[in-house]
Image 1 (tube, rainbow, N blue to C red):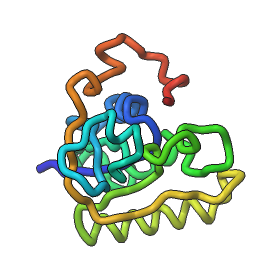
Image 2: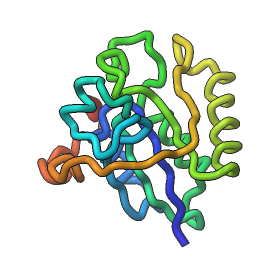
Image 3: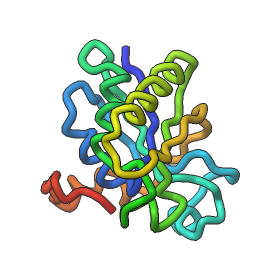
Length: 160
């Protein structure tokens, strides 16, 4: 039986591509979540009128990779601070967030976030928020598997 994680940390293309390389990840989809209108479009989200973030839904096999490991990878895959010229400083749709599916995920997310804050890995304060998952709206088809479709495989340069 698979589990689902929903995370947001900058442009969804790069985050999705990184998760697709992770053993135990069964499927990924990019979309929008956390906002206040139904069925937002990319244009609406980019105009900052919906409250949504660009997010990645990650279906994974918990026998191969744990939810904690999914979240630890999340912090490796993006800069969760606002102190550098990173994806998050450009638009609110790039906010760093973990959307939990249940109380068990919320507890794990809180522990992972606290661990990240305690280890002083970043120069500035971590801005990641933890929220209960809300409706996840799939992004337009041209956003799905963007890096695969365009044969962009340089994993070191993945970002916005």
